[in-house]
Every structure is written in C-alpha cells, then in structure tokens.
Image 1 (cartoon, rainbow, N blue to C red):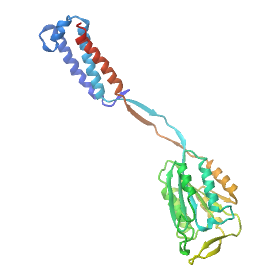
Image 2 (image 1 turned 120 degrees about the vertical axis):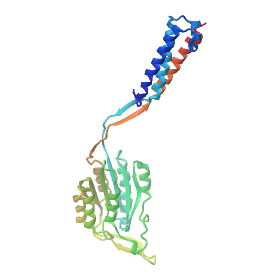
Image 3 (image 1 turned 90 degrees about the horizontal axis):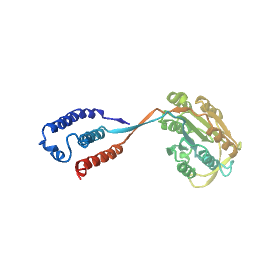
Image 4 (image 1 turned 135 degrees about the vertical axis):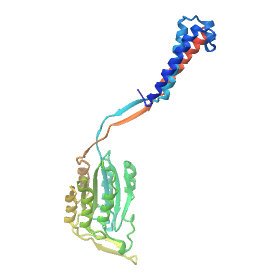
Length: 327
C-alpha cells in the first residue's frame, strides 16, 4: 500500500497540536464549551476521556489518508512472448480459377488458409487480395473466425476483372501495400504470398524489392508460394462481347519468386497439390518466432474501501463513548 499524495499527512501536525491544547485546556477550564458535556459523563482522568481524543485524532488520520489517495501497486513481471504479424497476400486474378487443382487453385488456397488459422494463436493476421489492383480485405486482427469467414467469401469477382484492360497480376503493388501496412515494430513481420504468378502490371519488380529492403531490411520476411500443377492449362473467361473463350495460362517467373524470398530472408515454395500447400503452411506456422520481452508494467489500484470501513468503525466507537457510555 502506498499513497500518491503523502504531503497531506503534514496536516496531522497542526491537528495533533490543536488536540493536545484542547485536552490540557479542559483540565484547566471546565467551562470550555466543546467538551463541557464530557465533564458531566467522565472524570478528567477517565480512560474514556483519553480514548475520546485519540478517536478524534484517528478520524482525522483516516480522512487525510483518503485525501492522500491510497493505492495498491501491482507490478507485472517481464513476460517473453512469441508474436508475429502475418500478411497473407492472396492472388485472385483469373488465372487462379484454373482447375489443375480441384476444384480450382483459389478454392484450394482459401481452404488451406483456413486450416492455417486453426494452428496459430497469438499472431495477428491481415488479408490482402490482388489482381490488376490491390485490395485490403481485412486489417490486422486476432479474430480468426472473422478472418476465415471473410476468406471463404473471396473470389475472382472480389476485384472487377470483367474486361481485358482490367485483368492482370500486380504482385509488386500488393507486396508494397502489405509492407506499408505494418506498423508495430515490436513484432516479427511476415508476408505469405500465394500466387500462380505473372507479374505483368504496374510497379517494376526490382524497384519494389529495393523499396522493401530499404524500408525494413532484415525485419521483414516474405514467403513465396507458387501454385501450379499442369505445365500448361487454360481458364475460361468472357470477352468484351460476353463470349466464353479459353485463355492459356502463362508460365511463371520462378526465379523472381526465389529472389523475393532470398532477399527478404524468407523461403520459396512450390505447391503441386493441395497436400503440398497444406504442408507449406504447416511449416510456416512452425517458424521460429522472435522472443519479445514486454516491459515492466505498474498498475495502481485505488484502495479507499479499507479506510472507509475503518472510518465507520472508529466513528461508531466515537459515538458509543460520547453518547451511549453515559447510560
């Protein structure tokens, strides 16, 4: 128990001085009006007469103790925890609806992401989807149920790609958005890029990677996952006249994906099947996490209640001596 404003206890000095004067003055002058009624009840040398003054002093002590703001100080010890902020950057371009993985690449990726969320506990997760442009689907959150629900509703139509000039894969824009979204420097930062990869929109790959290295250096890891099974596959989309056309899927720039992972101290993965993708996310979920040591935290809990109870007891005792004892 400590007092936040102990300076108030200085007031006890003049109060004690006044009570001493009153006490001895009563011996000399029986007509001193504040204590005249006590003279009728007690003799000057009565123990109750002395206790009466002591109780008065105690009442002042308790009041001043309350004014001094008594608190109970709790110190939370340093606690080492493993924390990660994870950005899942998910490709939703039309190539992700290719059916070389059943039912399609995007559906498999979403299912595996949901399984991944079941295996983590203290990590915050952020979902970013991208095609020809990027879109933040969900900010950093611990609510894995909400994340899974939103993930289940993601589709290739989440971002409008109905026209040829609105199709493509802006991988680097998505990575830059994910990088800029990190703000808590006390956590390990991880980006998991899930794509079938063809960086064919907007930002130049090398310029984007240089930006990441300059901004975060070794404090950010990117794990790149390439989803692909068939050497050659097609997707069916509608052209500007709403006719169904088969579009071949371009081959991946595998070396660039490896470069991204290497330069950010991450790792490159190739997912040939759903089982491969599950094993990849399982490996990522077991990544060594940097220990974060939290600072000592002092919590002050105001404890007036003890003094209120004591004041009631002392005051009742005071009334008993002053009024009831005479009977």
